[in-house]
Length: 100
Image 1 (cartoon, rainbow, N blue to C red):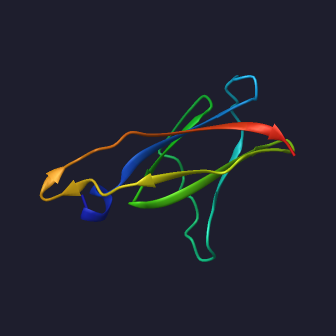
Image 2: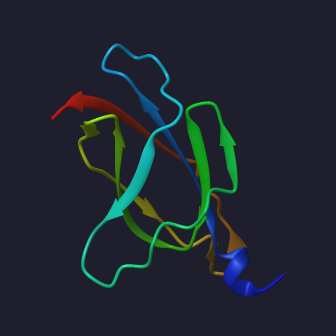
C-alpha cells in the first residue's frame, strides 16, 4: 500500500432535512480556493451518509438537494502518523439543508 494512501483519514458526511430526517440522494461538493482538487468518489455510501478517504488538509462541504442547500461546514483532516505513532481521528460532518 502506498504511503500516500496510508496517510488518509476517513471522513463521513451525513445530510438531514431541517427536521432531522436523513436525506439520501443529495449532491455534495467541496468549496474552497481555485485549483482545489475535486471531491473523490465515496469509499462507502450508506443511507444518507457518504464516507471518503481524504489526505490531511482543510475541507469545506456543501450539500444540495432539489433547490435547497446547506451552510458550508469545514473539517480539518490531520496527519495520521506523528513521531512514528499512528494516530487516528473520527471525522463526522452533519449538514442540514435549508431553503435558498
